[in-house]
Image (cartoon, rainbow, N blue to C red; front, side):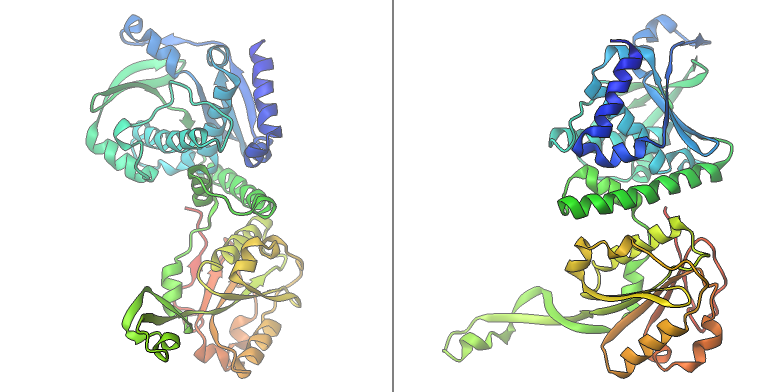
Length: 432
């Protein structure tokens, strides 16, 4: 089997195997090329390091003209199984969607690359060991032995390497800097497999686009199969999740729902049902938590498709913090107004379907919130997902609910200034 045929079979498996569905959808975006020539240039102690050199020349990824690329070495294809090639391609895809080509910033590139490799490889290895994916881990996959079973972020692993690793320059291999890295009793020859471009914004935009696609695909997978668990699933969710400070938001919300407290059994609250029969058992202490959230979703033409997908991610996250969510989607007119329980929301598709795309007005959604408020609905909080290119400022003083219901503005990338009397600390959507 030629390297081209072997690589083609690998890609076809990723495209067609059910457990690879997310990666199968993403791999269409990548250009994958085979590198044939290995150039040893100015390598110190070539003979000593030759076996190590062959071992580390696997693949690398980069972004060029807005398109993600994976270059994979012919020798690696020849000497490894299709299952090991699957592992490598998944590894490189995860580098791109997690933004590793631009996240390094001013950090030591070699150490950050190793930290990213460790997190990705331990995650994929766990997925292989637990039969989540039908791949195989190559013997060359970098894992820090001492940290293998610790659930650390890339930044945490990087800090560990700063304190515990020593780096020695080896020279150039195939026009790439090679380094010998010692970590305790481990010694690794390292060639970076993530290449940062000169345009970091282009790298980030490419990563953001893939994240948005991954969110949509993952939502479909969850709907088809239900929620699943596993280290790979957890990593993907962390990568594609929109980061907003839910803890701070919840602290502002009005607590309206009575629930058992975490330490629920207490003699301070006897269980009355048994008490009347002369049986004394500790009852449940209770606490209040936020119950009813209203989310207004701006679907006007000034909101781009990627931002709508990010809005969808935030709607889905809200189900972890509120029992009941009312979702009102609007541009000038209201196109959908649906109230749904948290459990129903997790299996629904309401959070990623949007209509509208006209101009923007918040008048009609404010009217509906006002009506709900005057009916004495126990509204815990209102969150508005918008770019703030609207009439909120001009209509603000016309409503009672804005004085008594906590409001949080969550802004898309098209960011407009928000007056402090509307929201003193609006949230700007960030992926990282």
